[in-house]
Image 1: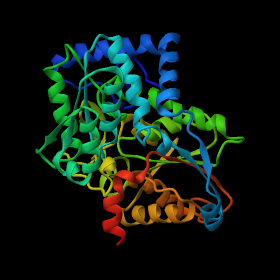
Image 2: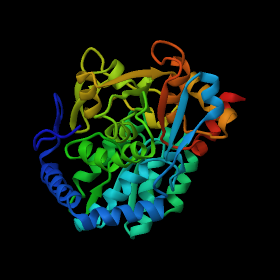
Image 3: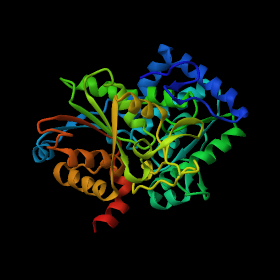
Length: 381
């Protein structure tokens, strides 16, 4: 999986569709990341941060009771055990170090479920950089715990009251703000979305998930599965296995299925697959998981689908909630509802031709369920 050409194309997808005022900023970022990523000193500093402050490497955990119930071997790559509780911190520490290297003094971010915002606030506190986070008002209501965490860490959290008041609108507002602040501000985009170089940059920073997991396993699993909103945890996981025989399965929310139900279009600076009406207008996405409440997917996932290298399916709100409860009961692990969509597919498909008995499955548990306790209480009471 690689960027083809300087425009950052993934087959028919990707590219850069931004106002002229952001072209120079994107060029600067692409050049700075290419230089930094080839610099052993930068890589060593990032690795040190990930070890000392994030807790890498994260383990691969067996699930003996649930595996026995399902008739397969289910292994969990435990991104929920990172500092701040999700995979988002891998990308953020890399971008924050890059911003400092570029001479930027301030970090800007969008967030849906709040985990990317918390990670960015954490990096800002670590490196002494002010942080502003845009978050949809609706997401702020259902993720109040994370809003408090961001503010406790010193970040400014800006409510977004336009549109659906969710991740799509937070991303739009963050990009608008960046236009007027590029001189001293780095936009720390949280997923494999947006204009080049972000889909490539974020994938490379999340590659640590798949690289670690592959090295931790004795054999290549039959199936590698991850939830997909924008798709960063899946892209990072798949990067470690794309050159193996493993099946790659991305699981979207039924109400935010950009790959499964989208059409080619342009949003937030890149061409990819998005939910659209017959006039080409972006349709509202819905998911009980705020991190999957996005009407599209990163361009690399669209390309992997076209190539037939990865397959994409969906899970609904109710089965994701049920999957979270089942993992909690069987293994003592409360997963984020985002990750529970991937687990829901495994539970549904186990023992069928889609996932035959005896299969070995690696599932990236992208985050922990602390942030979702209120939703789980409401849904399961």
